[in-house]
Image 1 (cartoon, each protein chain N blue to C red):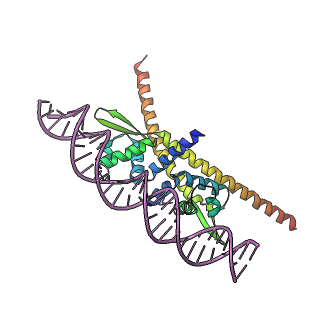
Image 2: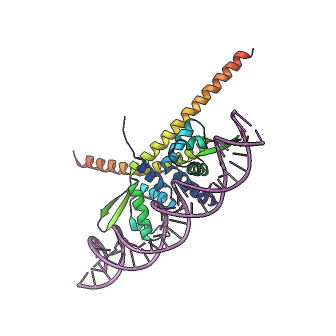
Image 3: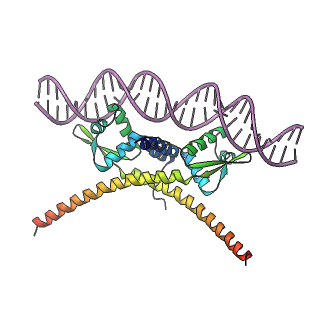
Length: 119
Length: 119
DNA sequence: GTAATCTACAACCAAATGGTTGTAGATCAG
DNA sequence: CTGATCTACAACCATTTGGTTGTAGATTAC
């Protein structure tokens, strides 16, 4: 499926975006209030251009949006990316739980047989 | 309460580990059943050494464990890493929801005032 | 015992990543 | 109008990443 192939790349970008402490901090900040790019840049010990790149990475990952507002660019949280990331991890959790419960079933069965064998 | 103090580097590694399609597939596979490293390697169009490295990345991220079993190395899902990742995303979600509800409150207040102004 | 299998690890390579500086175009303030 | 501010983007650099091949040590199978 072409859709899946494309979304694999999207997923790569999504988790890649989360794999940097500065970017995670930007996500937190803009999740509670909008920031301009320069407003964000003022928060970190790195150049404006570096922060600009981090924001671009987050935008490509659908974790933030940018909106031109006069000469500023307003950065806001984009819930879409976060939602997708959470959903993916939920799927892995579901797979894990399924195996967990299969194991639990087997243990219960063994316990039952043990119960049969003992008076 | 300081339940799980996760260093920024640990978090980097965690999400970095998820940012590759092969590694995500390995996580899914070993979540439903244990695999040897060579058993995993047989699934992908890349060298054994490449898969070995992917498994090592997942192990450092606490997403899988390896256990020597004869000459094989059995790879299993490690729920710890997945849980941490989910918890982190839950925190971002909480921050976002908080802002969301603040905005909803403001809108409700405005609607109320509008109601007061209109007969 | 010998051969096949499984793993570890080193050395190497191309591409991506995260940072820098510098330049230039818009927009706003006084 | 002029200067300050905000952004975009290019060029460059060091390090990391994801892959390769090759070698060597255990363990298992016959």
